[in-house]
Length: 232
Image (cartoon, rainbow, N blue to C red; front, side, top):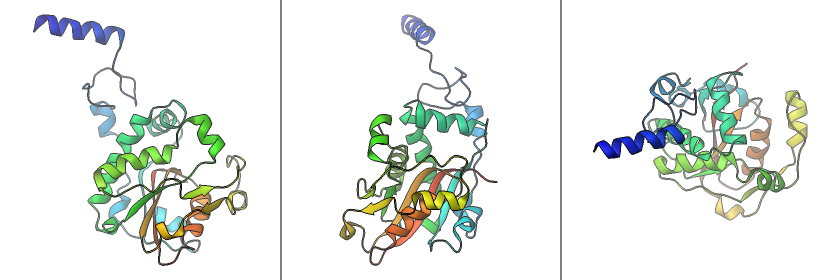
């Protein structure tokens, strides 16, 4: 036992297991976040409440059954670091982990009980190829594991690249993405309650554009969920 403990200490010295949120090494081997970061995750609790701030963003723009964001997002916050790790540092495990947390929140809410499938907001193929993955699909993987519903990949697609949305107004963002999406197989979506999933919600223009295309499918109901909400 002493030898096993010594080997563990040596491995930890050369290959430290650190918290994704704060870089502390005071965490269990099976966790991605330390207890302090877990306890300070900025949950919104919107899953439990109709007419929440996320749903209000889409009022008058797109008819949704429900909408939710799991966490508040702010610059220089822990959530910004976690999103950066997910999107740009190939840390897909944190996306799955946070997706599981959001999935559990939706399971506990009566407002999302009848979801038939998850649809990750698609990336333009060249951009996804360069990144190596779609972060929305990674989040869906964690959600699917706890919600026990399938993920529908590669049906809702981006048909051309768009300019970066940074520094654009809401109207400019909408014009930038309005005709970006196409559906390959409407039959696979027809008659379902779909949950469109993305990482961070800002103005909602991209989700609105994708959602409006999905709602052209016969007999579809649509809800939206994002991991984080950049509240103004």
